Image 1 (cartoon, rainbow, N blue to C red):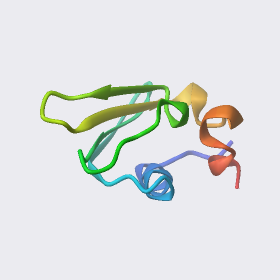
Image 2 (image 1 turned 60 degrees about the horizontal axis):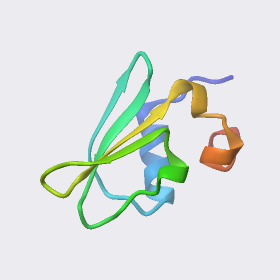
Image 3 (image 1 turned 60 degrees about the vertical axis):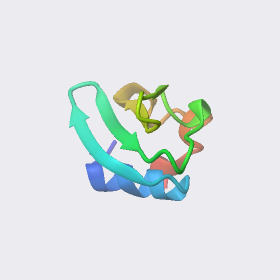
Length: 77
């Protein structure tokens, strides 16, 4: 398995037509704050929460990056 970068995660968000304000990488996976103008689907992430300001926080754990049912093989290409 190759190392997935924040740029790869950005491309994943763009493929889902999601505009992000912030992307971070931590030991468990990737997180991003998504604009309130685009609504993420829980089926494409490990977690999705709506923030009080109307933006969304999404998380894709390292375990789920290659999970076909979540990322539809995006990172296997």
